[in-house]
Image (cartoon, rainbow over all chains, first blue to last red; front, side, top):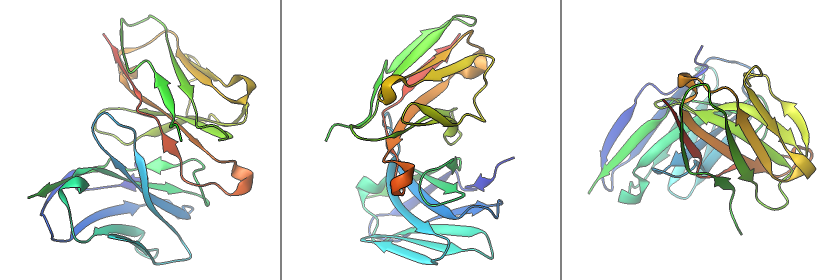
Length: 113
Length: 116
């Protein structure tokens, strides 16, 4: 039972344009959501998070949007840069922090120069 | 600041053999996690420690997997005996204490295990 779903295994975006990565979840107990970025042969690195009491969180070029009623979140990267090419994982937790994170299957983002 | 250290980076073993992975978390991080990432999937939590106590091991296959965190610092994850389906990357991560309000987890580079 995949409780966190990333339905797009890959995405290609032109440099300078907006990248939008999507994530859906089924467990209504999830209260805290995170995005991790992973380069080949490295461990995932934390990118940005959002609590369920918010619908938007912004950090530089990265913005995460949360739609609780639709159980959907998205990560926007504007403008996209070649260094953003990586696998992005959406993760969810039943409470603030990293307790029992459930990860999605990841989306491979490729930025085309 | 040194990151999470894991060894070995790669390991190839035959099925039914045993294997052990080692993790040294970031200094001062009380919470330590072991994740299993099978190819094409997201990381799955196997076990979570708070200092040297287990917080959650509900997804750890306890008939063959074991983990310990002696003295609340380094940790080892062992598989005995290994099966073909254990082929995966094993990721260790650490974060500040749950009681302090967790911050993001920092991951090591992982150990890629291939069981043949």
